[in-house]
Image 1 (cartoon, rainbow, N blue to C red):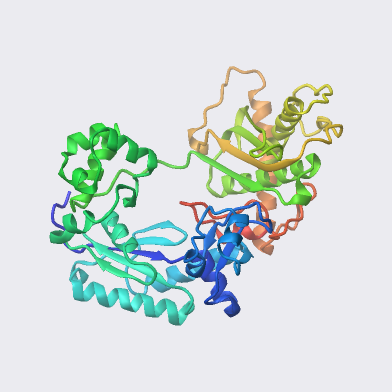
Image 2 (image 1 turned 90 degrees about the horizontal axis):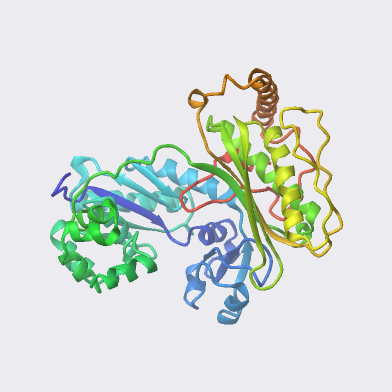
Length: 453
């Protein structure tokens, strides 16, 4: 733990990133209020807003019907996650010309541990200015960023948030207390509304109160060592938190286009999402032992929600095994949600490719689905899988799985070669975006290959 690291970290935050990319791609949008939306509907929410829209109070999460009332000239643009990833990769290439990248925190945030010779105010300022100029010249003039420089990555991120858009802010070791005292508790990354309430119950009402508490008291309030880490980070210490070990789950979800909300179209979407998840599973060299299906219907204000999971007899990574499981879960879901029920076939023999598929009911016209999600859990690398050698069918099951995985690998080879899905499993659903399932999460930037289909 370094108690006095100086100006060691630089943090870059791209301003209104999705909206800025859209303004860069379409010059007619520059200087105008823009909201990036998941679909063309007044009842969806903005997933990004330009600074011109933010001036009217429109922000991420604002319902579009309300946003249009707040900002009558608002221009809504469908999200194009593939384009945002392309720009992200170009920005990374530009960044490394000026400073090392230590962590890509999200699609629009990254941090850099500055070399010892570049930790003065003058040197860091030059790096920041060169970065901004490089992005404007080589990526596009509509792409702005705010940069923070501080003794550790948390304080650098806080500094970057202090001046937006196009800011450059330093928090020197001797200025930490004064600069933090001007902030609200929720201005600190890692302190949300619930954590703020917990702090207030403990008598911590302001940033000054948090600064003056002790590391042990902070640990007690948080209920974990994270509170103690937070105290040291806020006081300028630099150290790395333990990295999480591997993935815990892989999945995809989607809000359905209006034309894809009937049961059969929604089922095809769930199959498509699951196929993409198994592709990521294989690319990550994992096997999964649990499949979860979740749906939300269109009924009422929030819709009815349903989720269940099924455990595989042997961990797998091919799409065929998981699609058989999905048939079972989908039939169970229709039975649970539908007022008109029909008998559900018995569980499939998951290792027999010739087993008749589940018959899906079509007598539930009232069911309309707004969202579907599939999730693979219980992830393990091949070397960590141990089979039950005492089970009579173990070898037979293993051989069947290996045949399916060989077929899946052949499909992957075709996709890699032709940059698209030459062979598909079933009928791919047609969506407004042109691709299915792949979107940018807060802490995950999709690979370019995920947009090939």
